[in-house]
Length: 255
Ligand SMILES: [Zn+2]
Image (cartoon, rainbow, N blue to C red; front, side, top):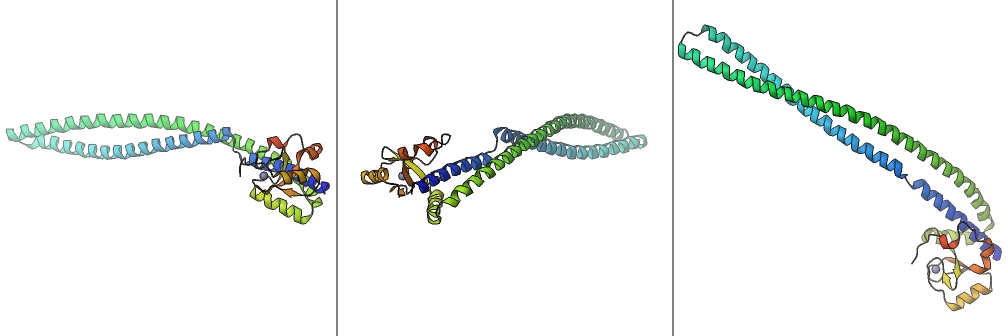
């Protein structure tokens, strides 16, 4: 019976390692997250500038058409000026020409401002495009690093998995099934030590009668509160792994 318990403890230690590897694989490195966020923001900025440029260009074209029409109108008025003979009509036409000229000058200035704005925006756009290219490079690098780390973890996991298979093969089927069942319902932690009558899984006191039995024989007991498989810590101190000592196990504190 002690042999079964030893194998269960070993299996639990291996499964904790596998769990840690799986967690590490899912964790997105901060540097990659930051680079991706920065890239996303710059892309949004670029989109906003492109929209602004497009709007301005549309407005500019409309302005140019209007100005062209006004130039035509001016030409017509100037031609008519040569033809009119009546003084009053001449004066009125002259006034009209002056007004058109004045309005056109205003339009020309506005058009110039628009073109300057477009030019400034285009420069900004170019700068942003450069920054985006750099960030894309950074994201690709960080992602490659992350993928390499993941591949490393996969290798490590495969080695540990082989160890697990070897241990699991030694455990009777129904006991292994029970272990898996509890593990799936108890956050990956199915086998826990009991120290000073306290279950290390749920941190509750186990009944004195059970505690006595646990110290006396090698049978497989379970915690009446969290249903985890329990063992008397002092009796198995020799096989408890150092690096994943039970104090460091991150199981749920209360259940
Ligand atoms: Zn418990």
